[in-house]
Length: 95
Image (cartoon, rainbow, N blue to C red; front, side):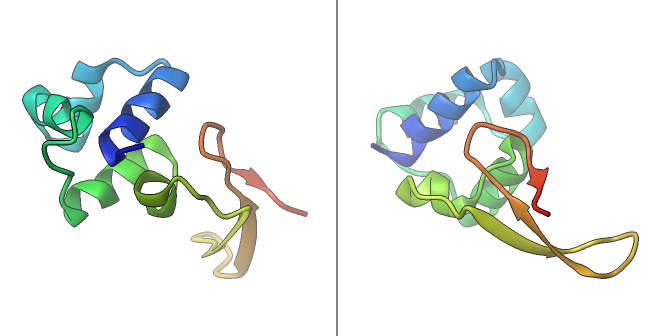
């Protein structure tokens, strides 16, 4: 599966309209169509924006794989925490 098809799959699963997605990540709808057909892929900068917006990892977008746990530093308490991240679900804290 191409990066573009994977992006469209996530959009569909999360019920996000393409126009809303395009506006949020600052790309043209035509670019998304090109990704869909595999004519070219998003840039690294675009992939970073897309993964943040869709709440999926770049690994998932590029390879179709995802980490069960992701480490991050909490902005409030400045401690490292682990979270469980699935490709189509919200991030849930891991106890």
